[in-house]
Image 1 (cartoon, rainbow, N blue to C red):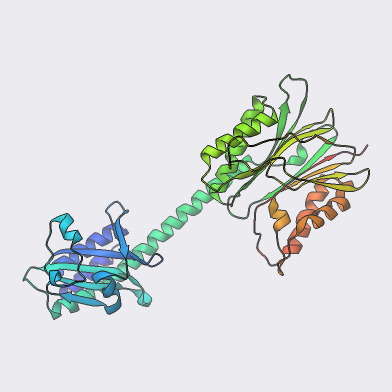
Image 2 (image 1 turned 120 degrees about the vertical axis):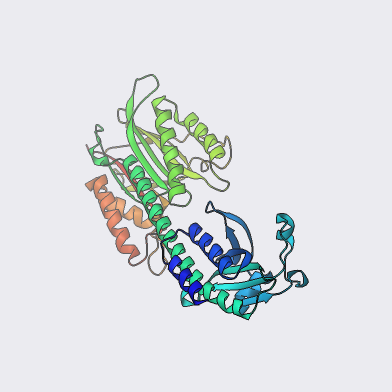
Length: 415
């Protein structure tokens, strides 16, 4: 018996992936206890279920971990059953499906380091016709080595999986950041200046903004296209949604589509593409410097802020329609263009600014944003964005950034 245990321990010391290791455990256990068959049921502690891992690394089936012989094995440590068909805990369905008849069994819990249960090993049908007490001792010893090996293999797989996920997130972040305009302040717009800020809460964000030139359908006017989009949630899924919105907006603009039809077509596409309950809020704008007008549609993206320099007044505007992706063909009334007088400021912020809370739980809110705009408007959009981010950071203190932060601020130069 000692030779078999030592040989098994030596075999388990070799590097295995989990699938290979399980095969090794099954073969060694069957050989050592002279059993016809053996199997390993792995434990999913989160779901409180057993599952059998297939050779491909997938799962063949699952069942509750608190039922039957396997479930009781977790509580007792080991069970020896001389006549399985006489035991009411035995499930005959597997035998019916496979055509194999289980006569006797040893079922032993796989308990590794820190008394952590990782599953159950079952050995079926002793070649001599029955299992004995010596087989129980041998099975428990084998189970101890097997459990530690499984823990090691699972930890290795977890590390590999985590490393791959981190790599994929890095790639996704690089792709998203490459789509963000690097320096909005370098845009050349006669009589205007622009500033922006983008900081996702996770590796990738559910926010997106874009700034690029446009030309009207008849070619008579040119200007600046403006996008700020915010998908529900954050992370990779949300990042994919807003990246799709950016791509559709760029394509529609290159085809010189008007804002109303552009919004409807994009909405209808998102209704088909987004999972149920998911949506995207978005501001689509076109600044026409020659007329000093900002034309826009805002689908669920609010509040919008217009600062009038002549009167030092703030005008808060609501969205023009509901968020995209909820229903097909929603009403999209056309808002009046914003007249940009000298010194005026247009402020677009994602809700991460307004809804960030401080340690006691108070939101940053509209009033603080408005006060900063009034205070810094004479210094231009760049100053508005810098002070806004600085004050928000001081406001949240030790609290984590709770949502993606995106800002686009456009100002007409003073006369």
